[in-house]
Image (cartoon, rainbow, N blue to C red; front, side, top):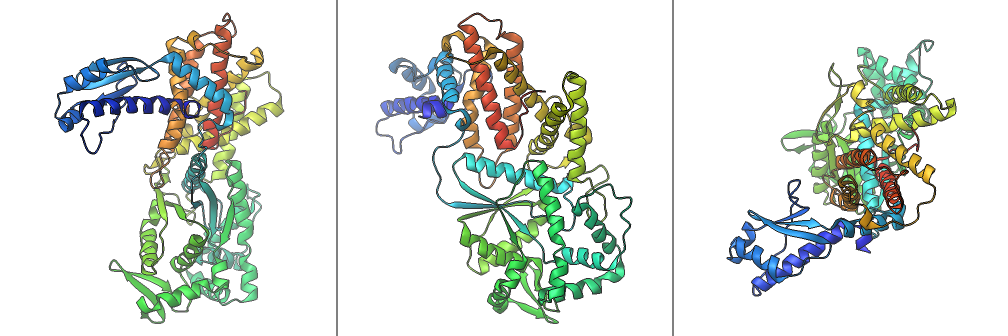
Length: 566
């Protein structure tokens, strides 16, 4: 099964076994047995390379003798057409016909499953992402969180893990209390509002209240009434649900849905937060009625003087509940939460409980600096998506004046949000992004539209050819064809290799998609498909079908939509 589900890995493992057999022949008493550590050589030097000097040192045998023994005393490994020593390396070339046969058959047989694991992994994972305060719409700086989180969840599922994505709704803290106080006390003119969604309307209350120096006392009283269970305060706090609904709609626009929503208030009402406070009380110090822990020479407050709780203690209660429902907890957090996350871990250690794995990301900044909902210095995700669709609409009209309005709109709504997701995920989470409209909505080069256009070209070719039946591996010998086939063959290995709980490299998925689209475009220029004679036409058509399928599979991991025409 591995030959078709992961052809590149199948050949690589065959080479490794062949090399290790040679090691055993050279040094049968060597303990522990040496393992083959293959590297990727420079272009033109083969497909796999075995470094010889490290092995020579361990075996006390010269590199020349190791290479000579492997080259003369063993048959070639399966799928290898050429072996050659170059300096301190033994290089291996993959047999293109062998690889073509396995790769195209694998994709044709597995279709949507190509690149995805058939082995179900043990353990339940809860991946928490987004969890934005429901006091206003998502801005671009925070949009990196759900896009990274959703992509990682897709990657984990592709590798056979049982994953639940979760949104922790902070419906009980000072942020929502500020919003509610403004809603109760301020009269805001909505006549000039350009947004109809509730999250855009209600954020004005939060922003205006944040600028009022005399509002703090009223906000604290409102929060105290809420935590004490006052029915009227509880009812007023429910306006956060309308804001949350607006956030959910924004997420759906970029193809993101959560499996579950857990509300912070649940742990207040159930008594879980109070129970955690009591468990920690023996470790706490008190100051004017407030409780705090000393963690790394910092005072970490759990409750205020009036008895209301701070976010971190409610977060502890949430994580204790979370670990009752999963084996592994993964949190996606902005870099500004590093201290809070460290403090949470220390408190969980104090209680003798598990800690979550945390993946931090850097923010997206504007030329003017860091975005802030409080200051109103922001670009909202809704505005970015709307603008991306608008620009995509104009681009499609310019390129395809023959399309009707309905088709133009459908394609634009596939291109725009995908361009946003791709642009954000292609940068490693640890690296900062300076937001620029022209880069976020680029339709050329390393972008979602570039990959979508290659997919559309595949679709167009296949529509003209009809059903693809059979192929001859030996007929695909052009360098452009082989380059594309090698890219297709490496996809399953990539999906497996980048799946790391603590540092998943999801940005490499965009690199793969770009390389595949670029390779296909070169193939399209060099190798006619429709005008080719049989059996070459059928073989090239099979290759086109495989490119289309793997493009869709990779796009699915990235949450991109392939419209089928551009």
